[in-house]
Each structure stands twice: as C-alpha cells, then as structure tokens.
Image (tube, rainbow, N blue to C red):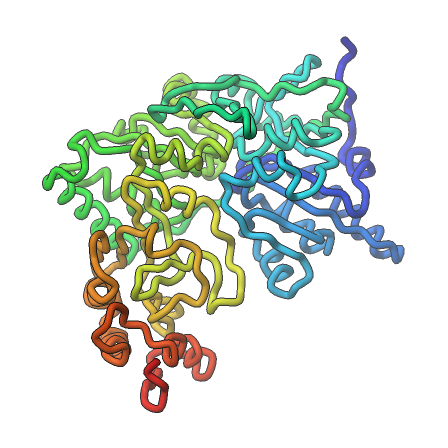
Length: 500
C-alpha cells in the first residue's frame, strides 16, 4: 500500500473551490484544523482581489478557532455556516447578513449531514495526531462530527498536528449509529462505557493528502470566578445538596452535564466544595479546566465528553501526566455525548446558561434582544429536554444593570418551559417543577430577579390578571422596547400600555 501524499498548506488550499461545502473537525477551538483554513482564507483574498467570487459553506461540530471561523469571516469567504459559532468576526458577518447561519441542536448535526439535509460535503478537513496508510485517523482534542464528515465527504485533507502526541490513540470512542430503519440502541449505560473504536477508519484512497503542522489549540482561558458567579455556584450546589437530603437525588449523585464558561466553572467548583455532594462523574459536551482541576483532586472520577476545551498549559499538563488521565477521560462524537436517549437513560443532571428567562420559565440562549445572534443553541436543549433535572443559570442583570435577564416574555425562544426545571441567578433559586404558570412567575420574580426590577415585574404580573397565566400581550416586550428607546430597562413604564 503506497504512503499518503504530503501537501503544503498552499497546495491543500488550491483544491478548495468556490461554492463547495466543507466539513471540519473540532468542537470549540479544540481539535479544529488551523493551517489549511488559514490558507483557504488567504486564497479567498487573492480571488477577491482579482475580481473573482470565492465563498465556501462550512459545517463543523460546534464553534472553531480564530484561524478557521475568524480567518474565513475576515476574508469574506463564508457563504453559509452551521451549527454553532463564537468568533466575533463571524458573529458580525452573520448579524450583518453577509454569512447565512443556521442554528441547530448539535446532536442532530451528524444525522442531518448523513441524511443529506445540508447538501453534499465535498471535502473534510480533519486534525489528527496520527494517520496511517491504512486509513486510520487518530483525532486530537475533540471528536465533534468528524467521523460523519470523513464518511460522507468525497475526499479528506488531514492536518497532522504534532503538537498533540500520537499516544492519544485510545482517548476517543468512535461510534456512529445506523440510520433508520436499521437503527438500534446506543449501549451507553455509564459515562465510562466504551462502545466504538479508537480511530476513524476510512478508505485510504479518500485521503487527498496530509499537511504537517505543530500548532496548539486556539483555546483561551475563561475569566476567573467572580463573587457573582461564585454566588450562583453556591446556590446550585446548595440546591442539589438539599435534593440529596430530601431523597430526590440519589445519595451517590448522578452524572453532571455543564455548559461552557466561567459561570460553569464556578458551579463545578461549588459542587466540589459542598460536603454533601459525593465524588461525581461527568457526561457532558465540553470538558473544561475546572473538570481537570477537580479530577486531579479526585472529586471528578471520570469525564465523558466531546472535547477537551482547556488552555494550552492545562492540555500540556494532561499530556505530561497521561498515565493518570488516560483512564479518566473519554471523547465521543457529539451525536453520542448529546444524544437524548443516553442522557435520559443515565439520569444526567443538566446545568446550562441562559441569555434571558421569562416569567413562564422559557429560556432564550441565543439572541440578544430577539434579533442579534450571540453564539447559538449548542447542546443545551439536547440535554435539557432529556435530563433527570434541567437547570438554567444566569446573572440577574447585564450591561451594568441596564438589562434584566428576567423578563416578562423572552424575545427569542430556545428551551421551552416544558424542558426547564430550575432557574438560578445570584439572588436565588426558582424550582419550577409542579408549579402553575402564575406560581412559576411569582417564584422567578421573588427568588431570581434583581431587586431593582422586582417592582416592575410585579406590576407587570398584576396587569396580567388572576387567570391561568400572568402574560399580557400588549406589554410583554415593553422592557425590551424601553432598552431600545433609552438604553435602560429600569425606565420602563406600564401606564398607557394595553393589558392584553
């Protein structure tokens, strides 16, 4: 069998054509290719300077890094993007209407690619720590949707990144379910269960070539835990501890799924600090630095996820102590980590962040003021709708208090009240389970809203009357509109606004 062809980044980029759809590895910036996408962006700039059109359609597992989403957005080389993003340049392009963006549940993405709903994938660009002439691809710090892209694409370009050691073979559990009508169960019963293979196996003839690099993941550190996020974390941990004492959560606890960011880190640290909560396992999307710190303290005993999204220094420390971590970490494709079947079966406790929450318990995770895309829904609803207990967390205000995150009605809906069990802000906890709409509204206002906004929200509820729901159609978005008028929701006036 002949050896694989070696390519320069410029040679690899020349294979990419205007209008084609590309699938890339990565889930966050972890495991995303860097060298070839940057070269494609450079090619786009040359083509544009010559007066020729050049845009591609890009599908990934989730967000990527600045050398991928960022470089392509700055080069105006993205015509269509899905399913998630977090790059500021790409966000501007999407909100300006220059890049068409489709936000979707991350568990559905691989299936929809296989079904052909997103069109044919011409090229897959995959970062690997090892690749053999037999078509065995060993991924790096994430899995995402890479297996599906490899199998559906006409051709594959491998970025062989020597920053990641080849001994990562065994970190990944590659499993793709059959499609209906031949689909069977996904036999994951515990976070540590392995059900697939350590490599992506492809026909070697599909591998167009290998580009060698040595580039760290473009994953930055999250903001330090603040007094506000620590308070949210303590409320979450205290709530779970009370549920354990009441017998509503097993004393052995349950697998935890946590969203991404500094608030999620604060929650995990608070769980670890609470003496009632035992050592626990993670069944989640993103394994971030707090998980690694708690693993070193043996408070987290195992973590199954889709990516290792940690700063370079943390990742290097993991590699340096691989004998310890290799039996405690497992990376899977996103349609397995986020699969509602598995989430429901193993009783996952889900904790995700919200942009805003309304008085019914509906959650907006994606749009600012109902119009401007922030990042995307990600996997939050994958977990929330199937979790043993689904919780959404957020600070009670934004923009220095000028925006209340507790509003009469969300300006964009991502997770409905039927999937949301508990809301937590720095002011407290609203347990919505078994509560009527009016009772939910009162709990959310009194326990979670900022004191500056409680009188406004109480007045709004009074306008809704004493019926089944407190909502008032004539006034539901008046706080949002006031922010547009004056820049401060606290200036909202209900007088003169219809009650229904």
